[in-house]
Length: 431
Ligand SMILES: [Zn+2]
Ligand SMILES: [Zn+2]
Image: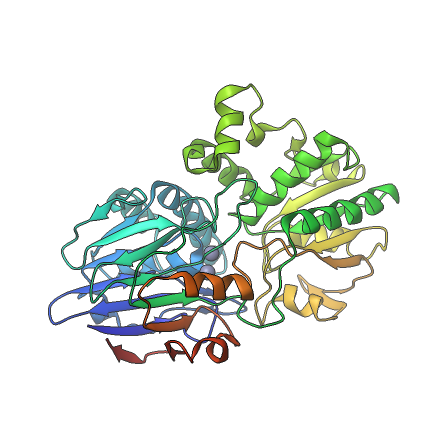
């Protein structure tokens, strides 16, 4: 069997791996890379027509964003995902299409998105799926709702992690451990030794402290967040702390696509952990519909800006979305605070601000950021030591491909025990 990396090699973004033997081809993820420029998997359009199946690990666009492009090239591979992934993908792809069309870049149409949605084959966790090419099983990856690791039943087992998170969060259980596979393709977003994530409790209390200090001064808090995953976790945490009295009462405004994705989380609550399911099933206390959550009713956002409040808004890396409006309105006032909670990729405005840049240009306007800038790591990914623990837990493991990461220290840690490969773009490996 051959494995080719068309994306997601030595980078975070455009995850796209193809497994093939003489007759069959299965694509694991089909994502795009969202930076200043869009980047696509380096696969030829003609090659797309020869793909039998695409298996999507989760809805984030760096894993699913290229699927409608495939359709627009008239290729029709079979597509597999979990139900939450399908539902969330529908929202993210439609939004991506709208944004690109708005920028005068049209790669596919809404019809392609609709066709993809109609054609997705829904797979439940732990069911064995017999496809036309290689049989596979999904296991919970703990990263966002519906996220799945794919165990392909070939050559002693090939496990593709997609994105994984280790810890139980407010909404999800951690990823499934100790699976059996000879070959592992793992994400390495936090693959550096210094990538140590604080416990959820530590992170939350830091978050609460910063927010209280800001509200106390009469300021606003902006939390840029991805629409899917981090946003829901942060909102649940804020709601919990506000209910307990630890967090000062104020309105929590939900902006951008986060409202829509919250509804999808609610519809798919069966995929959440038992705590959430119990709250929904056994009480009137639906955490997704908390009275603390608010949606702006004004185009000019007067209701949000009128009094100190917390704004959770897309996009997570400050590459567009309503958060840009708030940054422009609130960025020059030292009373306000910007809190990064997620990963900031190289080349994004979020990363530059995090690295100390304070003079920025927004919509052609020069802006000097005087607001407080903070970082609270609430991650949807396993950190360095968790990745090691996960990898060492895989039974019968012989070789590991380290992907979906920029630079990592994992190779040094692991090469005594396993064959370690850091694949390059467009390289093919035989196993
Ligand atoms: Zn992801
Ligand atoms: Zn990813």
